[in-house]
Length: 123
Image (tube, rainbow, N blue to C red; front, side, top):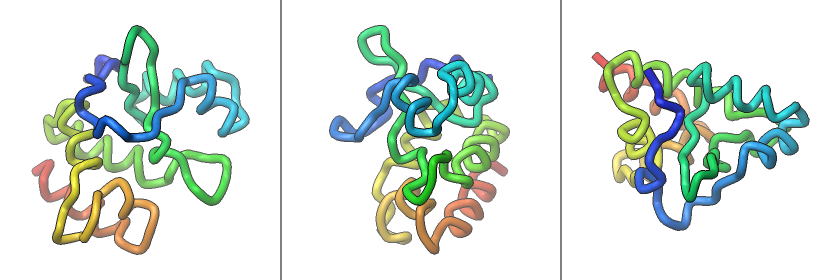
């Protein structure tokens, strides 16, 4: 189960982050809806200096929504026993076999490959 407070150190130091109110504004929803997404473990928030942030890469680049694959990858890995920090490290660490980072591949034609890998890792 998620503590909803993943370690900020699980992400690259230069990773763009948004506060929960900024995510709500981008998604055109109330901030409590973003909090629900975190509490339902559909998104992972990191805490820095007492403030919760969502990686901007969790949002879709094409419309006002979250990337459609993110909740599935989180669920697959969490069900496989991965902590939020381990999930973030998987998503945001370069993988030469993709090539690139899984989080970036989720925004392109390699999204299904990332899902397949997450499923294999979880079992």
